[in-house]
Amino acid sequence: MNEYLSAARDLVVDGMRESEIALSHELEYHLAVTVAHYMRKNISADRLTIRLVEVGRRGGPRDEARQIGDECLIGCAFFARRLTRLGGTTVHYAALGQVAYEAAGLEEAAGGFPDMLDVLQASGAAINDSSKPDLPIIIGRKGKGSSPQFLDISEARLIQRRREI
Image (cartoon, helix red, strand yellow):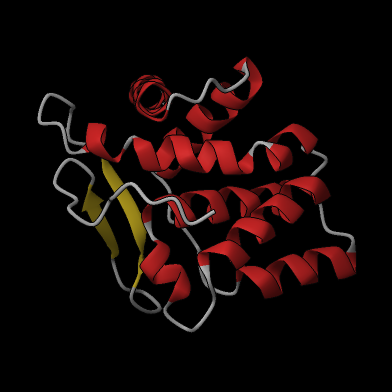
């Protein structure tokens, strides 16, 4: 985990420099831990809205709401096309992420969602920098029982700086 956290923190620091956004220490840490987590875990970007409604309806644990907020953040930053392929918008998923963080009791993360998203998007130039180590991100599975698909973020051309929110 330490090597992932170190790489994720470097990515966040690079994004803060590129975007000229100074995140609070708490948001910087939250973002680095979230990025490190998803460097080694599947992003389950399907049915995010329905999942959050179900968590709210059954009074699910705050961890589930936080996971949905994290997946919205990572999805909006790096996998917007995947999130929006069925007609949703990046703005919808960013707002959903904020609501999920609020439901998880993470008010600062909810309010800082747009800044954290901008930092991740600004880090896109840093991600494509050949001086960074190759770090795989699992982007999902095609179907039941299939092996994970990996995206080597050092070669990702689809990661661009976007200001949709």
